[in-house]
Amino acid sequence: MQKDDSFELYDIKVEVINNGIKPMVCNHKVGDYFILSGENFSLPNGQTFPIYCLATLIPIITVKQRLTDPNDWISTDHEIACPDINCGGVFKISRIGKKTFYHHLVTKMEQSS
Image (tube, rainbow, N blue to C red; front, side):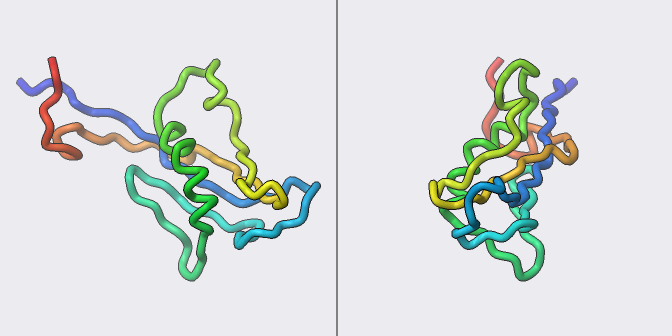
């Protein structure tokens, strides 16, 4: 009998909002968003997203995909500032769903005992 090698990841939506204090100066607009589902990143047709902002968000959203302790800050803090200190852009990170994955389908490496 094969052991259960399933795990769950949250789908993540990242949406641009404004902090109301500073003007938007980067190449993102309020309402722009992207979705991360498993390892797949998607944007609405015709929308772009600045690479520097994405580089800032990747370490955070990949952790937010996983189940985290309710007392951990990653479970409670959902807004991340734009990396440009002169920009009022803020990225709202939401868990919007959950999917089940299987170790044997996402890698060929054997699990250790």
